[in-house]
Image (cartoon, rainbow, N blue to C red; front, side):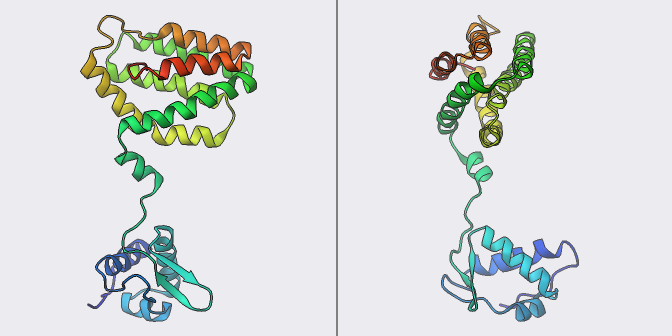
Length: 225
């Protein structure tokens, strides 16, 4: 099956997609060596630099692997799902368990590393959560996540912050659905306010174990926000 030339733009994306299609269709099975850059460039109607970037994209997707002095070989016919993709496909219960691990540790670190500015941000986020209690579930969940993000940020660990940010969209969707199904806020629109206020105090006081315990108790309840 001929590859056929690609349209002018975006060349790298088009070239990578054309090569990916050939691999997933079995034209080049696992273990096969891809044609050289010059050959691929001629068939695709692009420059060698475009082919090189397309192959890098395929390598990043886990489809091919270059071997020094030997060429580029197919190592899989299906791309490895990236972290964001895997999170989008994950069950919210699985994400919630990861949330517990990340946030409980972050709360402990926040109590040890917080600055006055961090505490001020947490206090503002707590007030924002209280204000959102008069609004819809989606607004309340957004305010709740903003509060928890402030706690994670106070840990001053960029990896923890990035990880929290990655699973936030899945977490948000799950929490909004949960509130809609359970009606948890019907009797208490500002549910778990005392626990959140106590967490701010524990972090501000530098009580790491207390902060971790408060958050653990809150997150062990799947209906907590």
